[in-house]
Structures are given as C-alpha cells and as structure tokens.
Length: 247
Image (cartoon, rainbow, N blue to C red; front, side, top):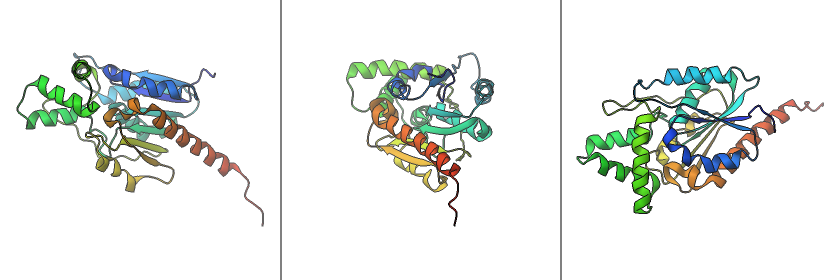
C-alpha cells in the first residue's frame, strides 16, 4: 500500500472518535486513508483559523490533491479549507453538515438550554436520546459523559453565550453531502437546502436511519456511497481524457 494517503479523515471532536471507527475501517480497506486530529484545550479560545493553518501546514507537503472527509464540526473545517485551498482537495465529503454548516449538536444543545428550564444533566440526557435514538439506560449514561467531554475538547465554535453563524458555502471542488432522514439536529430540510446550490459533479444522499451518527450505525451504506462518489470522479477524469471522435 502506498505511504501517501489518497484520503484524509478530519478529527476535531476527540471525544466522539469512537463513532467514526466503523466507517474508517471499511474505507481503509479500499484506499490509503490517514487521520488528522485537532484537540481543543480548555485554556485556549476556540479558533477555527488556528486549525485551518495547521491543516494547511500538513497538506501543503502532499504532492497531489486529497479526498477530505469529516463529520459535523470536522466537516465544517474541511469545507472552510476546501473553499480556501481548492487546489489541495480532490473532493470533499460532509457527514451531518447542513446547508448552514456551523450547526452541530452543540448548537442544538445550547439553543435548548436557553429554551428549556432544566438541569444540565437532564438536558444532556435528553440530547443523548436525540442523537442516538432509543438505547439502553446504561449506554445513555455513558454517552452523557462523552457529550460533557466533547463540550470541553471539540473545535465547535458555539458557547453558552453565543452561537456561531456561517452562511452557505459551495466549495469549488467535487462535493458529497450525506445525512440521515431521522436526524433531528441536521434535519432533512437542512440537507435539502444544499440541493439548489450543488454543482453538476456534486451529490446529496440521505441515509434511511441512524440519526446524527448514521455513519456509525450504517457504515456499510455510507462507505458504499463514498466509494461510488470517488469512482464517479475517476470515471469522469478518464472520460475527459478520451480523444474526441473524428467526423
């Protein structure tokens, strides 16, 4: 296998990495796949620009464009990077990223916190059910701890005091947008908002179920969509290189 990755998975939510592994295991069977990680510490302000600079420092040493992939806030980072440095990106795959790409589970949580008068623990428990669906009580309790950790360590730009807004962005690279039909955070309307903005080479796909972490619950379906998307790009390149028929 080549030491140069063909695809790069972005990790900016260390607490949520377990939900990415089933999909990464499948994709890595087909292509050289690397992971790029960023961890936000409690003592530093959330700074997307810092992460963008570090990501560019990594990618500028690659001698060819790469397939970027990211879920939620990681997808937002990939979107901003692809829009800024399209020459470095072969394609961009976004999972659970709506047409307003800064919306993530934390934005949903903080909005609910302002609307619902209840304890932090109770709201995080409700959020856990919203993200995962009907699961065992022990699993929900464990996931609440994961969410608390993510509030402290992720690159999400949202805080208790303000929501970060990012307008729709269509990067000048091939784009695959994936979401789930039963996701409450990135609902079908938010996904369909991409449709009128997509380029000819872009794709929009909705998983039948799996909610916010549909790529964890349906890794086979999601990996197939990503592979088909990558194959379509290679097919179009080969087709464009064919000589025009003579008359």
